Length: 152
Image 1 (cartoon, helix red, strand yellow):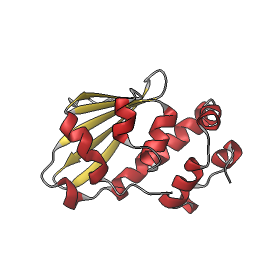
Image 2 (tube, one colour):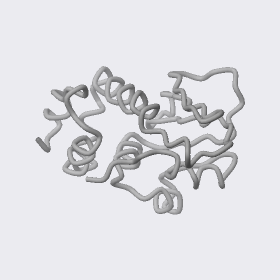
Image 3 (cartoon, one colour):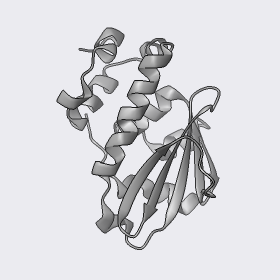
Image 4 (cartoon, helix red, strand yellow):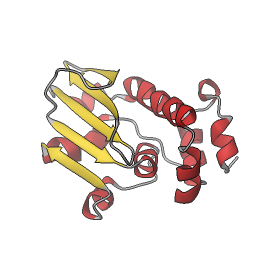
């Protein structure tokens, strides 16, 4: 299942994070871009990925961190999700809240899917300007340690 039809037909309730990582790894940047042209599919995939963040959160690694992370995903940066980490918990909100984020991460769909599936290095994305970080760079650098990121 390494084509965009496979992504469209994906049943997230039956796919582990590792299986999702393998699917994303098998897709080229062009195939991901084609798949996210379908707005409904794009939103479904983003919602599923963000919904899993709460269960993949590693509170023991976050310690006393209290922060809102704003994610702007897509070419137009129009799709916003926020991840709030506080007192050992993680909650995700779709859309912009009134909270002031400690860090905002801006990246395209392809980069986002590769990042959250363990198929891209955030430092490489940052230095190649495919990931823009606004705010607390230290917090941004620690985020990969706060979540159990699958590997393909």
